[in-house]
Image (cartoon, rainbow, N blue to C red):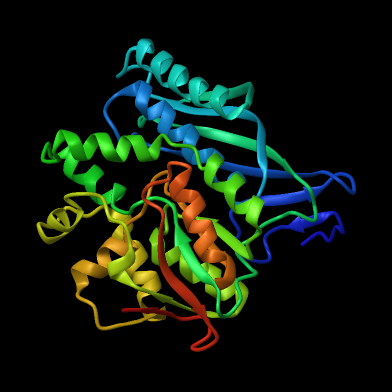
Length: 312
């Protein structure tokens, strides 16, 4: 691996994005994310994909500034109008975030996919990573869980309209506001909850910080119908992969159904913030007062067992 003193966050530890120092005052954050549709409406899919792709930059304390579209499009199966709506929805979210679209690349593929390669900026001394959680910290999550499970039920036509509306609203809400609030107060660590589920990303936080983490299931905000669909078997393939990989690192007596919600791969999920206990009450209050109504204190950082997650 090439060594470079300007590489501030690279491949040495699983991180949300890479960070490279340009000057003493500016570092760039680089990330990429794209996926297949999680909703039927093309315009909404574009919004969700862009919101999701920018989340890594917010999680690391940065401001997204530019992006490149990544598109895989089955031109023989779908009308070009579908692609126009996807791009339109994505551009609207980029405008909301103050991000400039510089271009992109499209390939003919059998399966539709869309997302971004995005670049942000951050002061080198104000970077937030998933490698600095301290024992005694409290953990705050800013969005509910269940998007993967509910999306699976949507494909079967079983999710209620109100439930679908709620997950779309969450998945198209930028993590920008939550990030600004946490940066204003000062926190120890942060990560965003996406494909590895709450427990997967929490495990990365624990390993990188060499700490343990305790999660209180009853405190975790969950979308309506999520528990019902889990019991009925509507779980995405990614959930099984997360459970198989991360379960050996979990200590719990909870039922399989309850754990599955915590393993559910999220799309455009919330921020998981590790904050000193003395600041946790103020942070939660500010988040709630600023309209992040599903923010909740879900756990704490513990010294032992290190590199393990305890779920109660």
